[in-house]
Image (cartoon, rainbow, N blue to C red; front, side, top):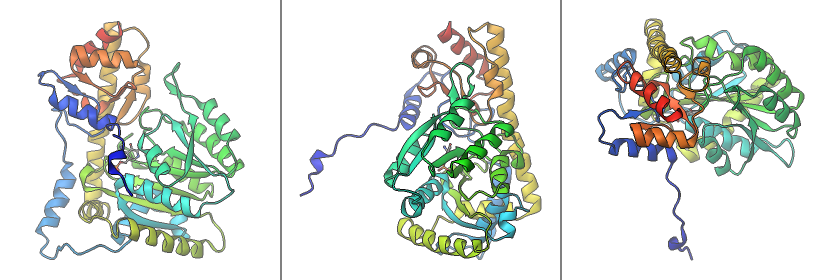
Length: 408
Ligand code: PMP
């Protein structure tokens, strides 16, 4: 019989635990640099003006109802999502080599991909998934939940606070042929460190030589550099090179649609004479998996994104909103580096501006992280990651001084 008494207590999710501790703190100067959500210059959540506009349009539509979406989601949304990530003139789209399903945000897309691979990806009896070390911690849980075993490839160099490129190449080279390689398309979470285009080319070479399967996780397109094409470059390069791959796409950050759970999963087959029939078969299996998992995806966030993605005027407005968010984050990086250098904080701080996207790996030790929390009410994860979006004109001086004090 099932003995529920024997179910052990699970540890609290570290990030959500940190958020709760921040909420409980009554100090007026407290700073939240833990959570990965954009904040404006007043530390408030930001509804993108273009999202507000689309939301108003939807609400005014007398024909809007709450019927189920199809299993694969809103077709206008998934088609626009393909164009956004692959580029409108992508050879994969032209050749009809892509199949896409709307998912429960990026998490759901990673999960659907992992589930599909666990069922159908069988290059040999051994199949291992490789994650960067470190990575978004949920990767470990999502892939092990579907029974895939994982290893990691070194990614972050503690010395340079940049990419451990030799470590990446070496590990991918020595991995069993046909391993699944999870890659962050841009704005690597948690380090903020991305390969250069030259480095991506080398990574692609090894992946091809070893017949590995690339699995791209893209949660920050447009949010990282402010330029959608630039942030999509790595994926587009792999497609150009004729790889078969999958993509988990999130709209949480770049539309600020966190809680609406808008995302998309894409499977792209390699160019071949029967690519189209392969895609049709893959799509049929994905639909069955989706049906058993969620039946059909949530509608509202996808409707908002779809309206914006399919209307040139709204799209242009969205690109401006992306520049607002990415621009503010880049400004905060510059300001933080300058302030730490002015304070003479021990160490080098160029990595703050070299890194990109929402997060920066400061290099603070766990001890220092706990010290800034204790002494200055600054909340960051134990690995020293800060969300740049938590900084603003009002708290950046305070934050830099708090770090300075903890490091000195
Ligand atoms: N992948 C990565 C690397 C992420 O950083 C995130 C967001 N934290 C996600 C996927 C998915 O997030 P969501 O499910 O909110 O779209």
